[in-house]
Length: 224
Ligand code: ADP
Ligand code: ADP
Image (cartoon, rainbow, N blue to C red; front, side, top):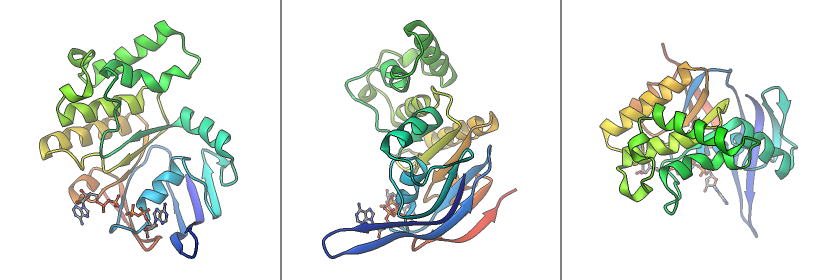
């Protein structure tokens, strides 16, 4: 990922908010990067753009060798479905679907046949130690288990990039550490991870911390 002088401005009737102000940074394939900064500095806006959920008002965004700054919704959506998995603070599971069905969701619109799909979902559930909760509903699970389901859903498609928005924000420290260990394992297998966090502890799992202020990068710390 190479972002150069990225600009995002929210406009309403008479108000203009510059959320990202000539933001530049690079993330290499296989890196694990933490993004930190105070509330309102533009982290969510940045994740939405990195996740190809939102457009930008200026600058360049190279994703996997392609300039995507001027992509329309359809092209962004195609690229997103194929390449990106999302993990959120609030899990964002669908309460009416079982664990299995939640994890199966990203595969529904792929070319995979039903049998291959089921096999893939069960493989991921196995990896996340969730087979015994396969037919449970999210509300019947602990927070840690729910986040493991969300991680399973994010990775079932073998995405190149995982975007995580405070993935441990609603978890106690034991479950939080477990989720961070999962992230570390996924990264060790080659998945690039960009994670927004308020937690210095969680940030230490990454290779590099990008610190933001007022829509810009202020410092970068390389960790061992
Ligand atoms: P966002 O950055 O997405 O706007 P918020 O800043 O509103 O998110 O906070 C998200 C969560 O992180 C909340 O649970 C909040 O209590 C917590 N939080 C916010 N700032 C800090 C901080 N400096 N240290 C620890 N937790 C924080
Ligand atoms: P963070 O995630 O770091 O808390 P955000 O990306 O949510 O920061 O917000 C960056 C700035 O953009 C803030 O000043 C916020 O008020 C503003 N902002 C975010 N979303 C919108 C929106 N939909 N409309 C107008 N302003 C917004």
